[in-house]
Length: 278
Image (cartoon, rainbow, N blue to C red; front, side, top):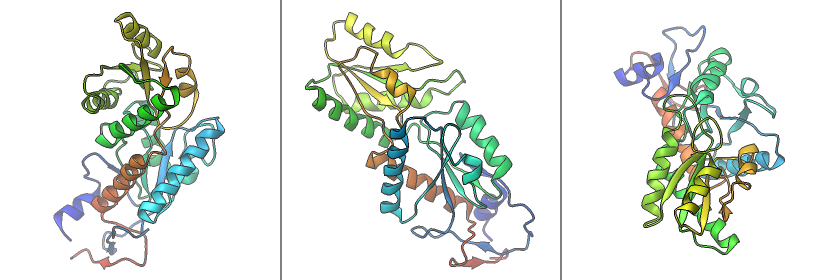
C-alpha cells in the first residue's frame, strides 16, 4: 500500500476530515475509488430552509450533479427539513458541505454530526473561494440586470456573514474574483448577519457615493430568510441564489471526487480490491 494511500486511510488529510471506520481489521483489503462510478455514498450537508423553493433549488442541483457525474447526492439538513444530516449519513460516505463560508456550521455543526453518526465518512471542504462561485455570481447578476432592465454601475456582494475568525474569508475572495469579471464596476462586500456592513448600509453607501444603479449579487446558495431580506435592501436588482447554477454542480462533483480519491477507500464490491501490502 502506498504511503499516500496509508495517509488517506489513517485520516491525514489536507483540507478534508476523515472519520475512522469502526471495527475494521487493519489487515482488511482496501478498495480503490474509481472516478465516474458511484462507489461511495455522496451526501450534501445543507443548512435547510422553511421555504419550499429551497427544496426545489436543491433538487435541481442534485439533478445537475447526477447528469454530470452519474451519482445522485443525498441531501442532509441541519435544520427545518428532513432528512436530517445524521439520518442521511451512511457508512463510508463522502460529505460535501453546501456552504460558501467557514463559519460555525462548516467548522462546528457539520463536523460534530459527522463525527457522531458518520462511520468511515470523509468530510470534504466547503465551496468558498473557488472561481466557479465568482462566475456563478456574475451570471446571476447579469440575469438580474436583464429582469430589471438596468446595468449595474456598482455591486454589493451579499454574504450570510459570520462572527467566527476567518468565517467571511470566502466572501472576500469571491468579491475580489467578481471584480475581475466586472471591469470598472466597484464591488463591495456586505453581510446579512453577524458582521458589518449590512447589505442595506452598503447599498446606501454606494448611492451616497454617486452610484445610481446598484445591484446585489447574492453570495448565497438557496432561498431562505436572507434572500427574502435582500429584496428590502434598496438595490435596483438582486441576483438569485447560486445552488442550481451549472458551475456549482460541477464544483460539488469535483469536491466529491477529489475527497473520495484522497481517501482511497470504497464500500463498493464492484471496484478493484487492493491488499494492505499493495
